Length: 123
Image (tube, rainbow, N blue to C red):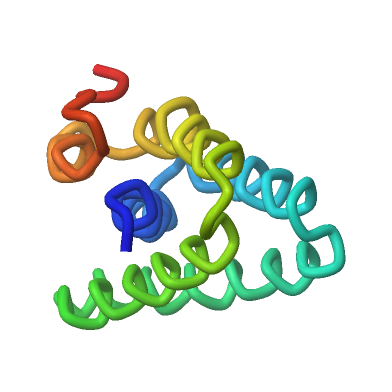
């Protein structure tokens, strides 16, 4: 799996627990709609369901569940952009512009260290 997919899935799940989630969710669904329009509504529903699981995991102090949820999104994002450098660049833009900025500062470093090319992404 490429580092961008790992960073994107991890950031996506991290953002689900924060106040920036509604805007980030809209951007993720819009990206999906551009790539696979027929799947966008299902992805939107899945994001809502997974968010509830992420919130429960955080409340229960269950980082293993949160990691498992992130791994699921990492795979989905890999399947979405696999083999297409333009889509991977679009995913990188989504991460840099919409997901990482919506994370709490203490979670950003873990994501930016996973980004390809040693680029730290937004500060």
